[in-house]
Amino acid sequence: MAKLYLIPTPIGNLEDITLRAIRLLKECDFILAEDTRTSGVLLKHFQIQKRMVSYHAHNEHKMLERIVEEIESSNSVALITDAGTPGISDPGFLIVRECIKRNIPVECLPGATAIIPALVNSGLPNDRFCFEGFLPQKKGRQTKMHSLKDEERTMVFYESPYRLVKTLEQLGEVFGKERQASVSRELTKMFEENKRGTLEELAAYFKSKTVKGEIVIVVGGKESGSKEQQEEAEDQE
Image (tube, rainbow, N blue to C red):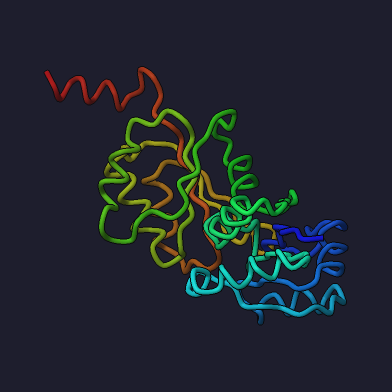
């Protein structure tokens, strides 16, 4: 049956894949993989022998038409990324949109993503939150941060270890150094770390060490009647 499956893969610990995900990876006609080398390790571990097609951010526009036509030819196709849920700061949106346009069934399995563990681990309010993904690296970076200055919901960002300290310092400059935050790295892996504190404290902590792994930054929203607002009111006076 023609169908696109979006299948989350472990963000670290291989035990986090679901039984249903394994079954569908074995049953589908072929697999779209962000990096066939990375996915090859996963498939080998679970004894899955299936044709893989490279599908990533640099070729998805070029590959889109051909892949969708193959799905229309009664092929069931699984889309996986290097880690986590397809479409979340990874390829997925374009092919899902095109399949929907052509009335091709699309199904996304529940599964691993770094957002939720980092958010819950942070100890910050999680009844309402916004996911911002990666901040712009250069153009628009400050504009984006300033647009979130008065956001009252908890905010979740992805970041690379190389820009972590700089990002924490910049967020502190815009949101206030005393804003509560949390940094999670290497989630589900042996050296998982969840560090909590103010933006200033976190910047100082990570500046003193070598940082590796995937990073999730969780920042508390602006509180009504907060110290930040009081300081702004004093400045205006």
